[in-house]
Image (cartoon, rainbow, N blue to C red; front, side, top):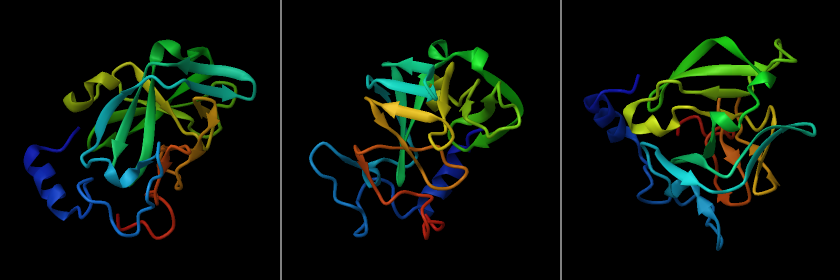
Length: 183
């Protein structure tokens, strides 16, 4: 469940970086790049026409050119693909979930062929009103399954919890790296 407006107001008072100014330690983006320090907090949802693919070895698990990117200060984008483009026979839902302060309750998935393996995907079946467009969309952990944006292999965001997609298009430093716990 998303926090109330009052709770969000209190949270935003303590955030030093909310996309209005880039900190001195941020990498300066080159032409054609984005700084994650220019992304807003609270996060925003942006449509993307980039070619997104998720693969297990040579097997295509998902592909689309109609996804959403969630952009949040200090984090690389997280791509959400329409559920209709996913091979759901390859995935198995776990009986566990989590709550995102912005998007709502998440459901997690593993590979059906590896039910004891790591969680590789998640989705918000009933997202908060601000992220309603994510209904019937799913995202994947690029450190646990091969993800590609316009043919570029995605590098995972550091940390076991984060699901950001790092490509040459974005510069950091990124939340999750050593010494970023206070962000």
